[in-house]
Image (cartoon, rainbow over all chains, first blue to last red; front, side, top):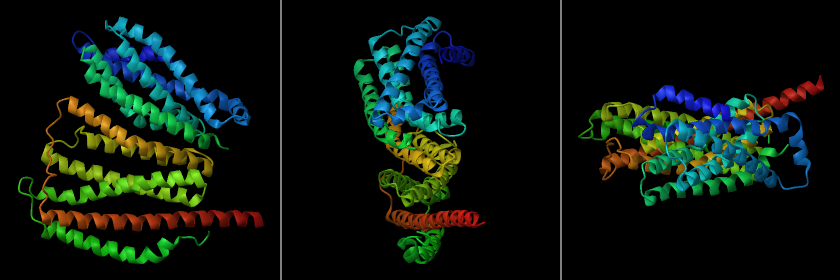
Amino acid sequence: MLVFALLVIVIFNFAFDVRGEAVALVAPGVLWVTLTFAGVLGFNRAFVLEKDRGCLEGLMLCPIDRGTIYWGKMAASLTFMLVVEAIVLPLFSIFFNLPLFMPSLLLIAFISTVGFAAVGTLFSAIAVHTRAREIMLPLLFFPVVVPVVIAAVEGTGMVLAVAPWASLVPWLQLVVAFDIIFLAVSWLLFEYVLEE
Amino acid sequence: MAEGAGWGQKILGRPLLIFSFGAMLVTLYLVFLWVPTERFQGIVQRIFYFHVPPAWVAFLAFFIVFVGSILYLWRGEGRWDDLAYSSAELGVVFTTVTLITGSLWGKPIWGVWWTWDPRLTATAILWLIYIAYLMIRAYVAEESRGARFAAVVGIVGFIDVPIVYLSIRWWRTLHPAPVVLTSEEGLPPAMLLTLIVSLVTFTALFIHLLFQRLSLRQMVAEVERLKEAQKEET
């Protein structure tokens, strides 16, 4: 996932010829496409091992609520993605000479990642039971997280352009609303996904 | 269950077919002969009457998918899944019609086939979500599991659409948006009437097609059942 993220950044560097003034314009997009792709890759793996080795059945036999499994898997995916971001963000700011370590940017990154993990966990639990799981997950995941991607890219762009905090707030609210809605919906629906 | 084509199909099936057919003729008459030509856009504006109704029907269809999906997960009855699935198929068809007629209309008026305007983009994303909804069934081996997964996608997708629309609208209003022609306000009575007739026609057509699709699904299930029964006998 990490190496993949770095490779995507390198590819984008060639694709957009990211230099000079273009950096501030293109960088938010590059960053979030990288993180979204890396996220999908991570979510794809989230259930594969457990499914193939029969661990998922074990989990389902546990006398706990299925919703609890959702929270556990979600927390694991979230942590995993945050670790990757913790490495990618510094590298990104080195490669593109951008000041990425601002509290507002870290906040955007965190809430957006929660949104990704909320939806990604639910869909990866679905995709792992399908044939062609690697294809199915992005097909489900990308259209649904469009609002988060837009908000993250816009928010990052604003932070880099040193826009006033007030213009950033609606985007943050949007992502937080997305997080709350889809954490709740995924948690409620997870039970039906794991049913045998 | 076997002959359970539903009371709606039995009572409404034929009248709906006749009604949709007649109403479509009336709509065609209104659109092509009766309604006055729009002053600025000219003849091409008439596609409006085939653009808005499919869009409305598509949203209706996806709402039915949403309700059907919830009821299926809640009650676990196959008929709700049949309803959601049939409606999703039709919704994708009507969304496709909306996108195509929209493009055809956009080219002469805006000068482009496509613009990343909130409504267009949201519709395209909607289309992608429900394509995934249909695909998930094809990719899951067990029928009931595919139905459950699809129901989850149907619910998540429908909740997602308003958020997608909102986010894209903000995204666009913050950027300099391309000049999008809006002729929404103050539709003349003749045009409004034509639009309403067209809406009713398309809605009737949708319900008719939905019933057809449902009974087709039930026939498929019946054939499967007969095949199984025959296998057991031999």
